[in-house]
Length: 341
Image 1: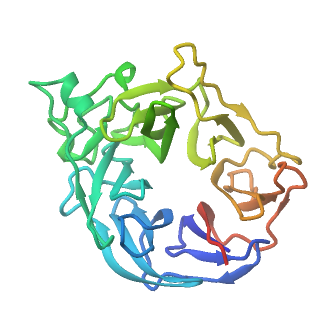
Image 2: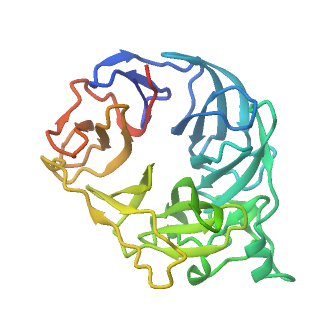
């Protein structure tokens, strides 16, 4: 089964079976404002598995915690709120390590912030600013609470808390941002956690989609140390980690790359197009992506001004035999979450 969030007038998540047939509308007991990332996680050791949903718009900046199963979920708490966390403004995505830490990408402050999850899994509070950032600016640096990946520009429109924040150059890992008519048009997007392991040990990492820079970027998860950037892409937004492969939606294409071995000084981190058969239609931009338990690949595309309608496409495990879901999308699909039945 899939849960889908939408960008537009639909303020709730809808449920679909693995073949793309509608199972239920409005699976959350309380609507959000603009639902974004959706995750089923055991976020803290010993805690229950909850459904976490980012709600990010100009009027709402929360991450909610829901309890439930199947097609019915009850909100039990506000997991993170801007009332307590200054970095939280227009959240897009959340990443969890399963050991009591999470990271949130925020479009209006243009930072990725780290949070410590309470033992019950129902709330989180900001961690310390990443030591990479405080090391870069030991005396003059000022960062929003919990920041591990900073913005390359400050202050930012509609984010008064960024007035005195230190901007970090893009070359040092600061995230790019595009502003037009005193409004942010493009900023940080998706974030995913990955545990890199080799003979030397385990290394917690963050993949971050820097849409305005046209890069997927790699950081140490706890310190925020900037490690590596991908090859130049167009407009990377959504990320999907499956095993040791990272996928990114870049315009109308799905690209993929093996997780880079950043220990190799000659590593050339490049994404290449996934050969979808048939290709996705028209020029519809890719949004959420997910694999089901049978290895089938599902990818959402948005509507366009030229009239193409929003859809979710299903491909087999070799990315062939693609066809759109039979269910009509009621709005532009945002994130896809697969939940085993």
